[in-house]
Image 1 (cartoon, helix red, strand yellow):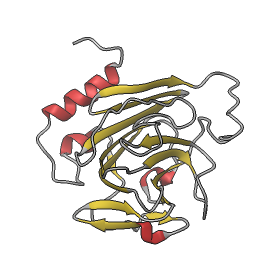
Image 2: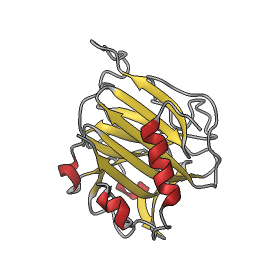
Image 3: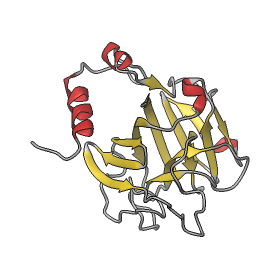
Length: 219
């Protein structure tokens, strides 16, 4: 099948052809292609939580996000936790009414919603109508593309000003930041730059699980 996203198609084809890897590990082919793990399935020692650190825990090889608002920032050794162009693959499972997100091009801050970078939404049935894989507040999607209680793979690719998100191989957002971009007043830090990743704990009623967080830095 022809696609206007050959890089994404090639990545999905590669995954389909590879033998299954142990959870939170890389196959030799993935390592040779430049992929790295951001989470080893055992601890979040390479991450730092804001606000309420107890929102994040590790169980059964998964990062479990459940509790008051907090954000877990990657501060590990891969690329010295400073990414500009990259491909990120992460497996996600949401419980009913969960709200979470994956921030990129962000930076550590001790409290509040991250001021810098983009949030890729994780939300299948929360009351907020903005759904999974949208660029929150910039290019949202209102269609449910994944189900609660079922693992799905969310993929984010950033190259220059071009951002593509997908869920289980289906492109959800294809966005290019305009030249001379001025972010909206309520999200002044929403611009392509560089920085780290953060996982969002949104509210005490939300529960989200993450595993197999894999990153491939691009030139």
